[in-house]
Image (cartoon, rainbow over all chains, first blue to last red; front, side, top):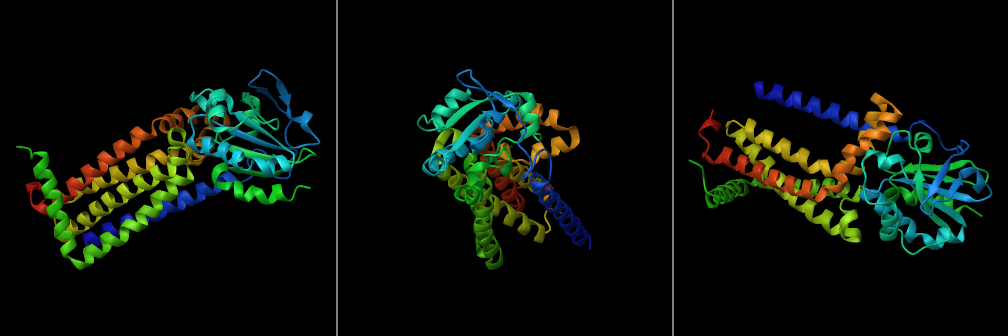
Length: 180
Length: 174
């Protein structure tokens, strides 16, 4: 009887834990911050070479905006994934901006230039890397995810958004392949 | 008086022999290995565990780590089931198993959105942006050390589970 009640208690705890995890896993897709269909907020980034770029200057181009942290293995895999799809990205004339989230989200990983050199592949004129300030990070990465990416169309509208680029980029490919 | 490593190893081997002699327990052990392997493999590869250090070889790192954890934890779990059936106290060995499971899951949380989502929900955006990296960054940078600690804890869990069914632990008897 005692054993049965313990089994029941453990089973209830496991069910509650799994349900909580399932609910939380759905949270990245809820409408927090900016969503698909919204106009991409106009923010500035400081590139590695010191140039300041404002997202609004890039209207007329499709932009893949990728917020990363340099201590995250998934981000390293994500940047290599972009490298892997370079021919498609180049063919669709998409500009890729890889930005380190504000202060590397509180923990300094590898310096960004070193990170891009190691995982970013050969230098390309459509791929730039830089740093996001607190305002830009609060707008585009309000939950402080290790990585999050947006596909912005030529009119400045967000047409795709997701986290964990290395694992989810295949879903973004449908949007990319539809670009004329 | 403590056992020497050779005696501890023999205790684990003898416990495994006891398990494998029972068809039901052997079936549970053999069927839980692939299930746990697939779980760990998914967790580790979906977060690209080890990519910072190993690049594309992270797949091998994930496969090896998943295999080690699935075998060790399956063995511990089945031994704890056997101990429970033999009416031996399992609190210490179950605690060891729980600690080992937590330790094996920890490295994959470095790149998971779970912690940031929780922190943002409780403390807001500024806290999530400035604080979650302090935890996840440490996990991400030191994941090989964390994996090594998880392997050690899994071995300890296996030993504790073996001890509880081998009669080497007087306080384990009910």
